[in-house]
Image (cartoon, rainbow, N blue to C red; front, side, top):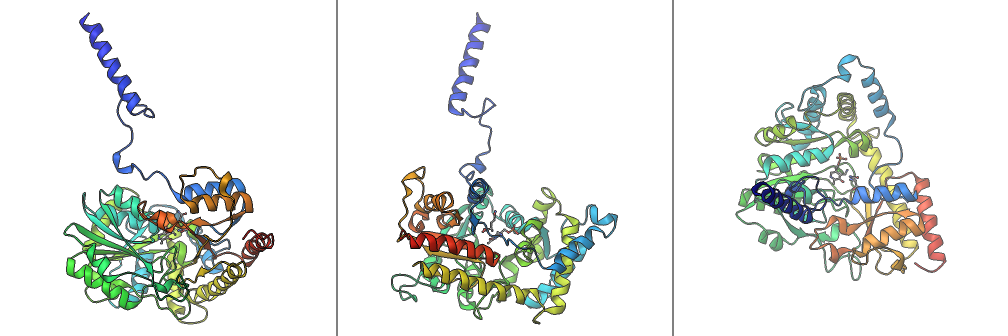
Length: 450
Ligand code: PMP
Ligand code: GLN
């Protein structure tokens, strides 16, 4: 009788748990709470749609052309470089690559970067960011994130146990255009608003220059304001600079790590994917003071260990070549922005010709535009509770055959709705792809729905 009763109690408890956690295969919740609420991902969602509908793709940020020939050759040569190219290399970065990164960036940061201590090679910039948050953000710490931001910062802060605190870039009231700014440079941080976000729990500030999706390139004076606050409050800075070579119209990219007092507290993140137009290689890096990098190494050695040897060897060769050619017309870091400037202009005039007002990016390879004036019959789109730009972009893919990215994905859940009338176009595409997008927009415009 006693045993029967006990079996009944246990079975009822199990049933109650299954009702509470209906998707689990265990009698308790399967997933860790650190991943709660971060399961939705804009790249996963929109890449699937692109796959399903095969639109002209100005969405996800990657070139639809090959990297420079010398980089393709470098990878092939690396692969044929003997057995060691196919085996493990040093955990924290292939020696040839950390040496070339240290040499290259020492000149730019204006101090000697130690290849073994101050550089960590990672699986793309993503993993550099992940290591920074995991290694340096403590449970309960606050991290100030400038909006709009590359979307992974928020889940990464959350998974580290931290709390993201947002501060927005806002269009200046006296910006170039009536009722809105028309250059990414007109989007600025308010010093008072930024200062008000610092608390005793603040551990780090995250910035991204040139910014994705806006294309803003922070001026030295703007970075100095951020640096002064970081120093005053004894806070770290994570500076995501994956688009550092892509600036236009004489705009200069400045590294916050090069400002006085900032080297000691800054992690600078870079990406070979963006630098050499080879996003699939997934080689990235973090550069910073030995005492910061050593903690990131701990995360790295116990998770990924190292990234592909041959890809690292090829990137090393790329940087060695660039170091020799820096400032000359043969340098890819000069050729790429020259080419992208033309594509930026091509896309901007296409958008303007159909009555849209793009915000001209000073850097990066994205352009955002307000679509609130566009007449789109979104009734067909599923989920009215979904942000307007998500519904709009889905409709654009399915009905017009053109893929872009909704800009509210680059805002916190709290602020996304305030910015859900913008969409982002990627212009690092073949001219034929940009032409195909233009044909779609012009056709649409001619049928007077735009
Ligand atoms: N930061 C920003 C701002 C990005 O746009 C991206 C996407 N490339 C990343 C980091 C991640 O870079 P990677 O592909 O090298 O991981
Ligand atoms: N960084 C790329 C972009 O902004 C996408 C990264 C990804 O696909 N996960 O488009």
